[in-house]
Picture 1: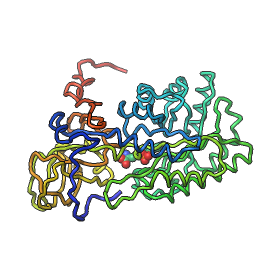
Picture 2: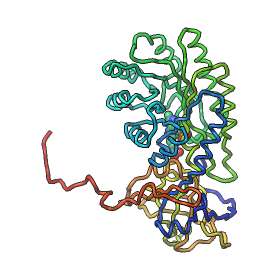
Picture 3: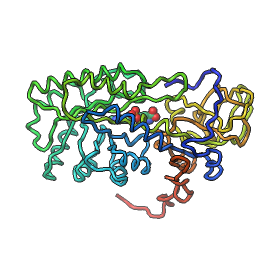
Picture 4: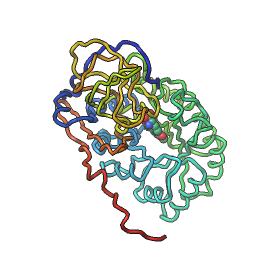
Length: 427
Ligand code: LLP
């Protein structure tokens, strides 16, 4: 991820339509800010990955957290994709969207007893277990329901993913997974947990990874451990390679790994393994399919800088303020204008509410429509109503047509559940 400062001149290439839907007309009709996703682009990503996986016993379990909109989940389900979930809420969404429980895997360090029991009772495919305490809880709850839970141990391979510290997960200092040493003990004592079928390995080293090497290194460690386990008489029927494939946020600078190369590296590292392969891509499937449409409220000349104040804010897209993430920003109109340097900021009352610093743009004026690109993952999914700004609508685009898949939040919806403190009770 690159910090939001730089000065290379942009091409000013305008994107006037996505998936054959005219963006200016869409913004006029639905207002801004507005999240739009190209369903064709998502289907293309799914198809490409599925093609690369052909011949393998592989299931793609989309990481729901990237974009949990029901319409996106439905699209995934229709394409034969399952779900990687990290909460009861994500499980309910996935089932609601028509995904079969048989294609759902459950990851996360903080699964509660209630969440585990709920997932057991709908019969999800597999638990990616992240601590010994969780393993014992799974045994206890599966026993209580008289079922056997399929489980994989999440290995923390202590590999540097060379990504932003806040989205790195595979180093020993991170809270995720357990060491191979600890996992070895779990397998050795497998027979003490008759309600857990511990026969899988899981690894996820981080997100927005733009090189193959960290994946290779992690998979080699997992593969070596798999061989060791099999020699010790512990069959491994499932290897979940996690997510993490990076995407292009900055044209010309970010060079993502191609799906074919990624899968080739998996095939190579896991050569000789005959069980099922699970993949948990999130961002790769949806990020570049999405844009955030926003309108310039005003141009504000500052003392040191010139500000472009837009109507989207950090509550609609947190990535720049949270990770200093770069997102390309382009005007929707392609008419030639003088290159001008701006800080592009939202209306929220924090200096961190900044989408870009020192960004060279075509000169802008109030009312101009801009596209913040590659916002399909971790955009709307991380949105909040901070500053009492209602959640922006989400629209799915498909070959010249659009469908509103989340309407703009009404004020009444935003305050629903709140009430004056009329009823005082004691505990
Ligand atoms: N599997 C597990 C266990 C995960 O924790 C994650 C993401 C994924 C799969 C999907 O990773 P992906 O393929 O999307 O990289 N909010 C951050 C990203 C946080 C990712 C958390 N875990 C961002 O906006 O960059």
